[in-house]
Length: 314
Image 1 (cartoon, rainbow, N blue to C red):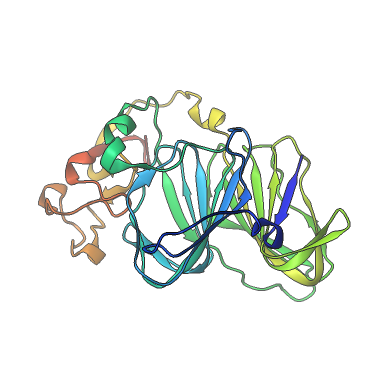
Image 2: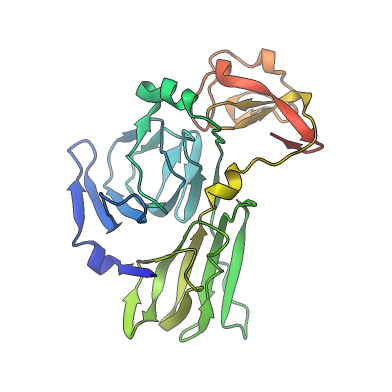
């Protein structure tokens, strides 16, 4: 059954307050500690001041959506409405900020909590058939063209063959539409950021979350008098992603190296100019002090990529 929770209701579910080093609060939109099959979504609020969350990973796929403010994840600065997707057992971080920020953590299923690389690296390396991958992208709302009632726009690259998808949705006042079909994936979140929508004879103001199960019908949205802006997240079906698929034999490709922990790729042709590594720098000439920009791994955790076809690898 589709689940709907607005911020005004969720804020009564204050899970915990931060300590003095991390002021703010954690609010549970969907929180079922004893049921792994239920969705898990929290709003994490951090007041201005030093914030550091070390490199860690989770045992399930998850999204971060930055609702307000900014922070650095690894070496990349994220701003309002940035989306980060990470597959299960993909390390990321550290998360660093001094300005204050608010973000959502969203999972289709609950997990046991953050597992820090500093303590759980050996366990991570023992996970069978691990397929690490992550991606960060901004979500934009370009505005509605004259005469259109709504616009649903897919976020480039935030997709895979197992049902992953990220969309922005804008709706005129009182307009109606349906969210993308949740069936191909493992659950869907509709995050209404601004405006409102009507559901079961009740108006829900943004910030509101909707969770749609794969077996549910596409969620019907009826915008309120102010219209709405929303981000829609489709979780991939891990059973489809984990299914073995035959392919061409792999061949060595000298020039691209990938992090075995988080799957970041270093391309010798492109280099890392922002890190002071010019384009064309060979892997052996990259300083030993350099670390992965996504998970802070050392050079020793990188391997040469094996390509399966031009422009692809596994």
